[in-house]
Image (cartoon, rainbow, N blue to C red; front, side):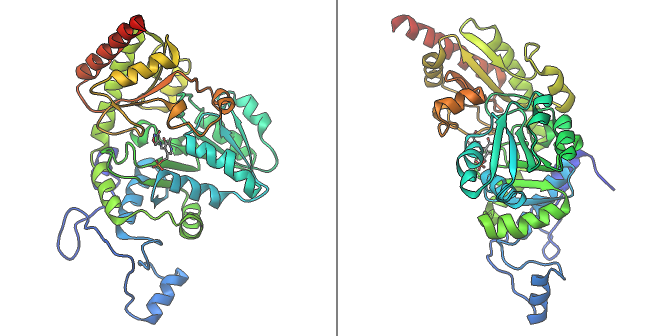
Length: 399
Ligand code: LCS
């Protein structure tokens, strides 16, 4: 019997320990696994028999995470990694080789952008970064050697929405795959495989874990690709092995994913609506607002509107800096998806590896402030923003 999504968050991938009955999955903090005899070891290496060998190749805590995320995303299989970047680099190294071309959204998490734009050319992998919201332009940009379309939706940090169904169609027509980084959403908000994506990635550091105490990543997709990813990208190319303890914490976090994420999103809507009415604020990008240019597309592919907000203040970067220096409840920190609300400045922080020209091409203005709405009472979050906006108005007059 297939259980519903909320039940899967709690139960999928876990079961009472057969020996002791322990209900929480025990932490298998071991590097290696003993074989009963030489033939068993040989069979496991040949892939003729299931079973663990060495934690870089798999571990029961990984298995639990992989089954849960794959199930929640509607994928055949999953692979756990030591970080979101571990999952991303392993997927890209597994799927691409010298001579291939990748078409990517122009606004991506800074390190993903750096990997594709700054480092891949050294290995003969070509890339084009573009506004993926124009599907005709995407179709024209496909080349005979395009093997992948890569996107985030909403994108970090500009909140651009990619038409997942349209991109999957274009990718498949051109013999390429669509890879979607679903970190900003979690499967509670969006399930890209339903729209045709081939691989879905997560920085599990964020909503999946949800408690700000783990760095982890997961990739899910078709079984054949995930097997290859485990044996090549993760085992040989990156060695980005998730620690069993972190896998345990991640599993613990995911049991409440379906309760946490809707609350994050509900509060984000209130915060966005508050910010939009403030005279100090030039613009608010939040997919749930009527003013959001791609609201219809967002509503088509997202169940909730997420809990990430981008804003630009009328006073630009200086005003933004004063705002993030003045909040008391919102923490000035990178990362997202934690219980604590976080605020940061992408141009000088998460996206600081991008040159001014690259920031401009990605549509990341110097004044953009990014907010990750947490699980506090919305009234407290709004009151803190109000005092910070008012404090900066006073500072502005003094300056
Ligand atoms: N994908 C997205 C969309 C991200 O935002 C991040 C990290 C990653 C992948 C990489 O994941 P990690 O290796 O850190 O687990 N984003 C961060 C951010 O926006 N602030 O700090 C990290």
